[in-house]
Length: 512
Image (cartoon, rainbow, N blue to C red; front, side, top):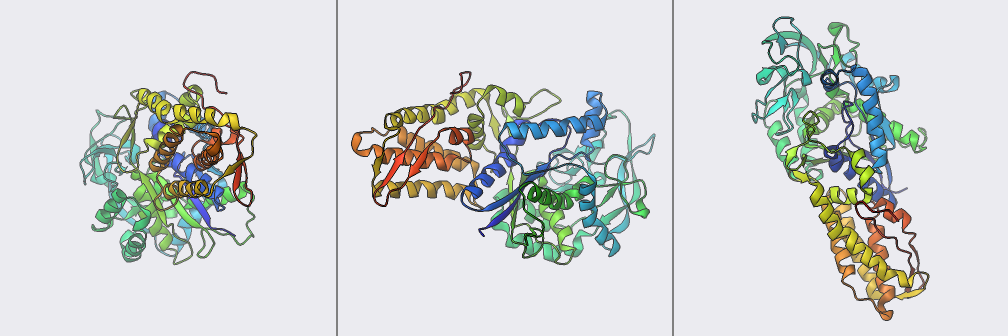
């Protein structure tokens, strides 16, 4: 059996559909890696889903004038549909269910029973006139580390956790004119500091599976005292906490991450027909799989620090993730995507107008891997035409006269094909996975093929290298690869190739 992976993309909040900011980072990256790994003989379980326990659903529903549960149900369906439209083939799409809740509590209840979850008073902002506590989306202020404006929870700018009671100049987005106070309330917490040494050892050992900004942020976080991790919140929206000391509170949505990961993996295995008794238990030590998260920078604390610490607290019962492939923000015309301001491009709207291969290529080329990048419709039109559509269609036209012919392939061309495959593999493999470099490699090879003056003597070499490029680009150009009907047969010496190319459509033109 070949190498096995678990690939996970943290669930977006079910408070709306997916825009390009969601798709350009972890979703497309995870899908491309999954397709590549499977094409090279590896087994992959790919999980994601939609989360309906975050308070962002309540605040968004209030703005839209709908019931939160109605919004969550509608958004969950929209998210699943948009992923499908973009060709992002998630195996296990995890949503709230009884089985999901059992998975989350399966992580927390053993820790509670062992006395590893502690009841402690914590200061929380509250509305002075009603005493209502404010956490996560209910309260906003400046990050105590970098001073960026954020909701409570996690800072998307510096990656540090933000305790609601530590926000500078907090205010309520729902009630901006009402004064806030600060009041202590007992909640269950997980003492992160007790696992500092084990956590530091694991994270230091796996720094090679992270990008530089995440490494820097983790080192900063680990250089400071580790704050207690809130397990429960004194609010009404979320998964009810079953612990008697905090009756009426809910589970903090961020500590659902570990249970969700295990549930999404099991769901993915079920969807792919992997039987539970096959000896393949990815989340058990020695279970046969290597675990990789593809996520946004603002999710690093929930998954790489808090999530790993919760797993460590189980005393070796669970395997630990190796890779955390974090991306930065993807913007629209150099400004943050904003649904409330209408500054947004929805994935489903764009794919209705533009062939999704072109979208996938452009999002890969502009992927925000190391710094914020930006989507521009005009730039997308220009770039895809100059780097992808034009070069490919001219290349396909040069191949077409040789369709159906059996052509010799020289050893030199076979060696060139191996080098092409190696360059793509260098950008597809973990831990150095890069959507940008894979798209750039594709553009470089298409430019080379576009400049090739084909004659009878080297037609076989040309067709062979065209086919190699297309096969290597298949994780990105999913429709072209499926519909090009390209086939190769290899004779003992030299090789031979047969190829039937397909044109790439341009914007606003019929696909064919």
